[in-house]
Length: 135
Image 1 (tube, rainbow, N blue to C red):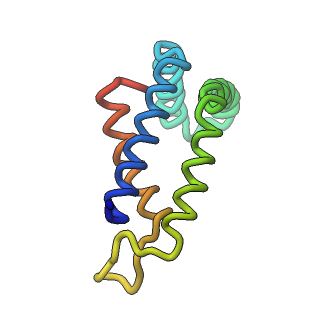
Image 2: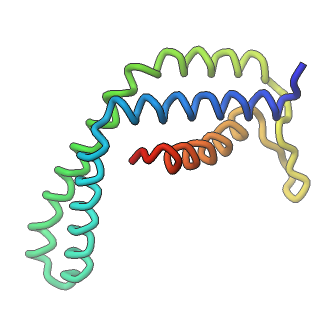
């Protein structure tokens, strides 16, 4: 039998990998890259035109439109992994209820399954996105 940290680590790793793979193939990565590039360009323009309110009002809607487009694209793959994610979280909640996964001796607390999962999934998602070149 695995310990709680090992269990949560493996689940976070598998879920992060699944989500990254689905995102890689369900979202056009070239379009996302282009949107991010344009948003960065608008951010620079806004920074250089901080004192020009008219210019800021002109740039802001363009940025919002791009951000909304990017957000809509990120919702598309969610339909593939939403149900499995709900099942995994239900199982984790039942299995790990009341168990300390990561004790924090430097702080008067600990991390249960959810806090541990969140930290580990951020770590694994970042790694998988870099390795698989997912935006």
